[in-house]
Image (cartoon, rainbow, N blue to C red; front, side, top):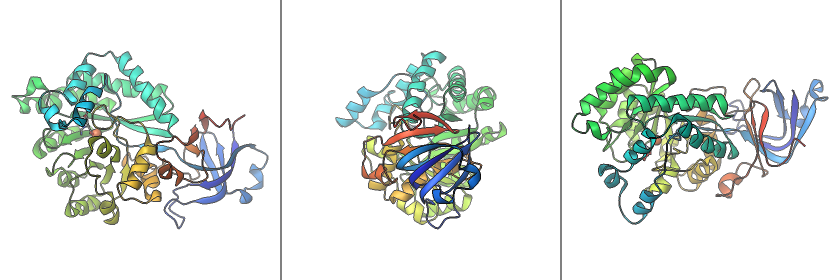
Length: 408
Ligand code: NIG
Ligand code: FE
């Protein structure tokens, strides 16, 4: 069913043909047909052939592309509220992890959960994402760390993609940490990933990720896992330079990773290498909030010409939030991006980080994944933090959230 979404005060298109970063069209209309964007422009220029279509009135609000959340771990069981409280009382994340808590407590809970339990818990999270304007999300495995649970997690990610309006992009993160049963045999665990996990997990995944950091995997181990992933058709992406400076960013550039994520401790020289390798920086400002650490150097990366995406990192340990609006607010208020850069990074940047070039913008031919903000411009997102201003969400042209009752 075709219709015109009109009376849009500010339309963020992210079209690179326009002079400003966000490709803003004022007093705009969008024609939606067959789930895709058919036409975009100032409403007064709406071609005659569309004038008879049903009109949905955005009421002078802003419209932007749906958020593309390019880094999450949102399939897991249990929570870690107790550890969160302990961290606020002074214990460190690394201490809790080294003592067998942290990621390992979520691994224990996830191993003990059925596929249905994992599916139901993740569905609730995807529901919150959708209410917050996210229309595409990347999800990593990595709380199984054994063949059966890694596989089960990826099956849940696929089931979510089939049954939930939010599209999911699956990433295999068998190399999240070394599980306790391999504490004295790290090599044995890397080998299990290579010969045991990848053959059964790779068919359900698009990317292979490694947590390459202090207390997780070394650069050499990470390289080995990524090479094995490639043999199974999975492109590399990497968690790097989060807890310390361990050389992971240089590895990301060396292997031509699609993205290098976290990057709290990245240097300028490494940033230049990432840029030259065509690697996208996925920054996670809500992790710095929850971990009470300094923000990653978003300004430096942007100024050096590294394409930047921002994402929630939704996980029970370092960032339990589904809110891309919060991430945009933090990127602008705390990480040094302008409001426009933050909005771009949460939409077009996320799409590029997931190699989905038809997402994250509003141009003819793109899927009509749109957010109607209950505000006249997108700057209201960082300007009014902590409030969900998302009034309506269209996924492939269908209203999947309509708090404003726009469809009437
Ligand atoms: O992205 N850095 C590694 N993994 C997650 C944290 C996982 C957890 O604490 O459960 C992250 O921050
Ligand atoms: Fe992560």
